[in-house]
Image (cartoon, rainbow, N blue to C red; front, top):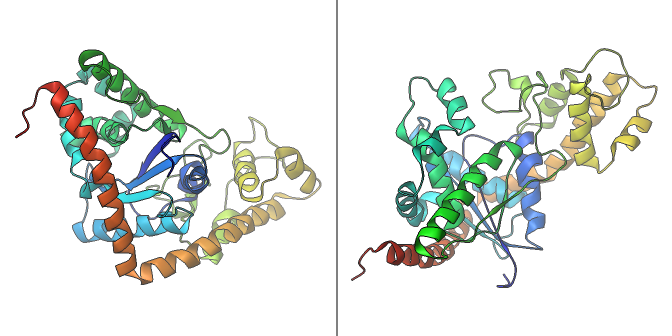
Length: 332
């Protein structure tokens, strides 16, 4: 990794299998970014426990998430990939940053409000303060760019505010990060409710496509996808279902709206939905095959993650040492 290149950091929670939305909005971009940036990627399992987890299930999901990232194009020879909890500096920096974050800033986080509604019986302190841990994830590595979906932009903005506040108080320490949001397909909507974001927590399994869904399952979900009145394939505000499917098809095939509209002119929604489903199957099949191979060799996967954590700790330790010195902590 060339020192002169800007650095990218991004993390993803091991909260079950990734969806098509995760792939379109985040995961598919991470491999290509390696050609341009110094990339650091993490499976952020510390964030996952803001919601109660079954320990064995969390461990399994953590390995599966790492395997899916590798299968989707992350090269451990080009990037650093690691499990968040194996780098203790994330939690250590989080405390210092918490002392430089205002209560009002956290209370305005829209995701805290949303998650509190969904987890009314477990509104814990971590659920409130996890944006600080997210800031620590980013600032530990002095990331210049943070690939995020539009719904995560607020957290990067908080990270910027914290970095600037710390730099103003203690002199320049952190790079002030910027969100890196892909314009097309940054937000994929539910196949059953185009007004809602695609989510694996949706109780309706037909609302989302998982990256490890079998081809016949993927096709069935697209055939059942909600469309709109009329039968014309075109993007319009009054056609959210079709517009969502056009976004997915465009990303999977590289075709623009004009080409898609021309391809399906005079054809019904049935043909269109089947084509969208097949395009997803075509992209996911080789990823699924590679994913299975990676999981089958757990020793190699553990080696990759162990070496990634070692690299991450070396970078993180330098940042944390600088932060501790600047705030006045002793070092013996």
